[in-house]
Image (cartoon, rainbow, N blue to C red; front, side, top):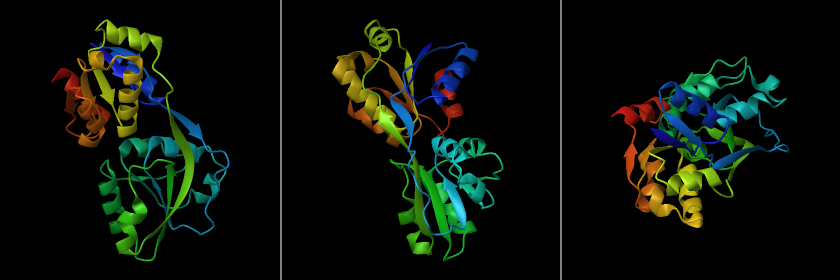
Amino acid sequence: MRVLVTRPQPDADATAARLAAAGHEALVEPMLIIEAIRGARLPEARPDALALTSVNGARALGARAEWTALKHLPLYTVGWRTAQAAPEGAAPQAAGGDGAALAALLRARLPRGARLLHVCGEDRAVDLGAALAADGIAVDLFTLYRAVPAPALSGAAIAAARRGQIDAAFHFSPRTAATLVARAAEAGISPALGRVTHLCFSPKVAAPLAAAGWPVRIAAAPNENALFALLSA
């Protein structure tokens, strides 16, 4: 089976390697490009804990000089993948994989009056400040990266779609899914990708694909293992 992988690098290559090990072929076509925000400045208020809601945020934090001063703080992550990517020296506590689970974990662990530093990108899937306001937990943002949409599909992806050489596609985020829909329309291959089975982390990820009329299947859990399970289902 040939699977289109739309997630950003370096995760796209990791997924491609896993597909190859399982006997599948990957067509890597990242729909977002991750860029570090070099001029990001740490908020002045002293935090009591840190929160990470993405692997990209975890990587970006580990590359910053500020990590040395922050590494002693309790660190909470949205899920186990983000926890695995946490900077060296961290002892992360992982939530169940989505923003609601992370907010629940933070409510249980942080007292009223605590201040949380949310290490994040410019576009955030979860607003921890809004989620925790009623609990008296203040949230500051340390925005370290941005995800830029890919300007166009590659010639290889366009040709494969037109020839019917893509069997399935993996989708990990609403933005990558929406970007693929837009770039496919620009390339004139929307009908071809409408014949591909689109395997998605969640209903939210599937929404832009379903709106385009493309067939979607939703994983039982928001993780890569569940996407792979759909390939053999």
